[in-house]
Image (cartoon, rainbow, N blue to C red; front, side, top):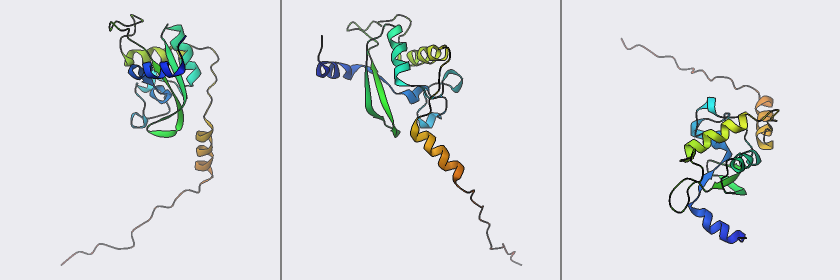
Length: 147
């Protein structure tokens, strides 16, 4: 049995997966890594962890690590894709992109999946709805033609 410190040191060479990588509610500039049709809304760490376990991949969950593009999105998973001899643990998954596709496909296939909107996003939506619409400013200056 390894200690948490040994796992942390060892997992530095592993691939990192943040839930926003497969979140269909985000844009690519906000961190989504797959096409929108291949993604799912608001993926959870535990869903991703269950998929990795079923694929037979060793992983470590870090619930307190923030997503670099949005610090309010907490959590990441470190995954070991390759063995010491550079061969994949799962022959179907040879790279991170393929892994993300498999995870999204597996989560989509979960029957009766409940999409939980994170609390900070729910609060932002409420604020958007309560905010009065802004009026467009019109220019009071008229263009003059030079004769």
